[in-house]
Amino acid sequence: MKTMMKILFLLILLSGIIISCKDEPTPDPGETEAPKLTQDINRFIRTVMEDVYLWYAQLPDIDIRYEFDPMTYFDKLLYTDDKFSSVTDDIQALENSFEGIEKSYGWSLAFGRFSDTQTIFALVEFVYPGTPADLAGAKRGDIIFEMNDADITDDNYLDLLNGDNMKFTYGQYVVGSGITNVKTANMTALQLNLNPVVLTNIIEEGGKKIGYLLYAQFIGTYNSDLDTVFQHFKDAGVTDLVVDFRYNPGGGIDAAQHLASILAPENVVNEQKTLVTYQWNDKYQEYWETNSVQNQLQVNFLNSVPIKMGFNKIHVITGIGTYSAPELVITGLKPYMDVVTVGETTGGKYLAGITLKPEDYYDSKSTYADFDTWGIYVMIIRYANSQGVTDFKDGISPDIAVDDDLFSPIPLGDKTEAMLKVAIEDITGTPIVAKKSAKIPDYEIFDRGFSRFDTFKQQGVLLNNIDKNGLLK
Image (cartoon, rainbow, N blue to C red):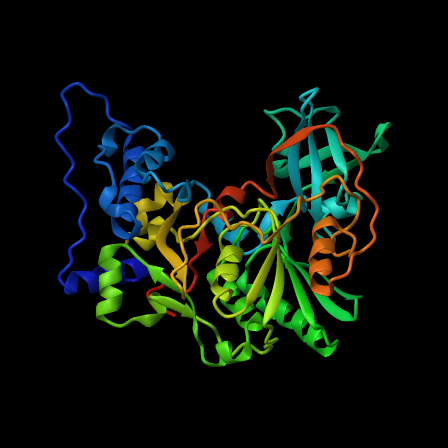
């Protein structure tokens, strides 16, 4: 059997545990059934959920023949506490996005609404270098108030992330004057390879050399870029570190393991102590434990990383956009070192998932040819740090609370930027003089994101230390 899940099925079957789909009940006379293709997709969804889903034992008994929308059917299967698992009919695009490959303008936006006028606007959080948004002149703090010569509305605001072509009007908010320095620009979305190592800086302040890293997503193929950054920090004699996760929605556990191993005290890394442990559903947990498959029960620090900074204390900037993998790094490091969080409460994702496609369950292409673009990002484990900390459903509260000043034009990495300023002051013990923020009319931020796959990226650590070709890494 070619796929990981089929091999696991065989191994579990041999150990005396049988996984099986329930027999479909006899249809009621005269009741209309869903089209065959819809039933086939529903059946694939059910098969995956009965196999690997963390809460498979709580699946409701729903007849797939009378479910006419597979996405709605999938939502009906989810356990009460599961706000994380998702289904898509464009699995290739989703998997590309997890690797930093996607069609995009290259900016991250926060969407807000002024309280008095209910006018919707977008604020630029950051821009990837060399992308259409960067070439169009967009920068942090810009306020976008029109697109394609029309107002931004509840119905169209996501076009600023998902559209193919865009004319946008933007400026800066000035007290007493409103939006000034108004400009327009045009962009065409491109297929981009986005390096998550967005920005680095070394700040000398109060006798300290402070390294700063803005890391936007955990992608293992860019681990060597992390190595390059930290080699530079080490060569420059960096004494302290600020890692900026405020816009990081998560990603792969291999990248999380790599970064944590760079940062942790050297004895922790050299002794390969436990970063996190896994809790699977009962049948998989029993199999891994019975057969002592340790790499499916826990993740250890990696002593083979080329750079070991050996910090005993770091500062981490967090925000409402901080989910899953960065939370894993924060919680995984805390038993071994001082991790000071600065900013806002994180999203609260303590689960890990995997993407699964029809080809992972069916031998014959003809069986699933009509729905081979479908796939599921399904939660299969709960993780905990070495002290058992897990289930932080309400997020990780910051040790030092600071609001993200999105209207400020001060660039990320500048020592006077609101969140970084507070982190540096905590490191040095001395205040930094900075301009006061402009007083902005009351507003609320109701959404934020980078791409149409943000909700997937925020929905748990991507468990990519499993090889779906049938071998366990």
